[in-house]
Length: 379
Ligand SMILES: *Cc1c(COP(=O)(O)O)cnc(C)c1O
Image (cartoon, rainbow, N blue to C red; front, side, top):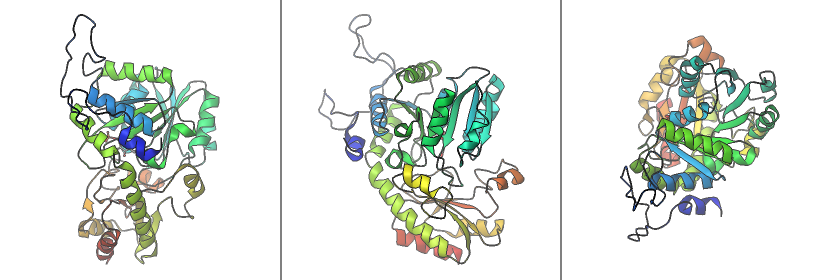
């Protein structure tokens, strides 16, 4: 089956009791047994809930894998992956990383004796120097936030195989419609379903997917043992979101392309970070591993003044000033004072997060209206 068909049909079937075509929200904690052990596959909703189960099967199918697990947030999903490791193990991670992931690694797991290395993976060869016999996990985010760097997943998968380490890819920015890391050799795919999978800015959720049976057993054991599961209502919302993922992401890509080109020609704009440009340092890798370039764009202003960036994010009317991304509505953010405020200026500037950097999550509104909004704000 092709993507659009799987997005709508995989894992779901009409309710047998009533014929309801939509997966019911099974708002229940427990399930009646007709004798000890005589149940229908569901015993207790931390372990398994039918609405969540339908979502887990659906997301696994669209990532071209067999096993999915849904968590209470993206960070809870990442937490599950790191809990597959033991004290003394080492993790090599992308350096330009989602801030919450960095915080989880360095302030929670480092004290349990897991060692983290942060490496510029835009050239995968950089990773090799950090591989030791203790390397058990390589963590990749691509495209990265907010600099839109691209990491060659297939090349990193080769390094992970040689090192006998698991490769996990945070696929939040790309979505499975644009990029399927399992096909490129990844062992685990992670999502903040809060973003494009949910797609309507109304739920917080995390997802893990794997096609490796051994890893899946650990994943479900940890999911059930630590209990950071997602709720039936939220599972329903994300299942519904995924039904239009391909349609939404197509429009995110179209609008993203138009806005990236508009920004690139605007006299006040200095640099535009978007992997669709031939001048992007890893454009060829993006073209090879992605089926489109998405709707996430960052740009800087000539003169690089913080006040100018603040003025623009305030002046826009359709773009909403907010954290998060991936919803149908366009959002604008200022990383230096929002998502990356806790990182010292010198540190953040090394990765490109300068004072005038502005990040856009381009929504699915009319592109002409979005461009007119930016045009007015840029003056
Ligand atoms: C938002 C986000 C996360 C964390 O997900 P939550 O659902 O907020 O816990 C992880 N990675 C990326 C790339 C994100 O954008």
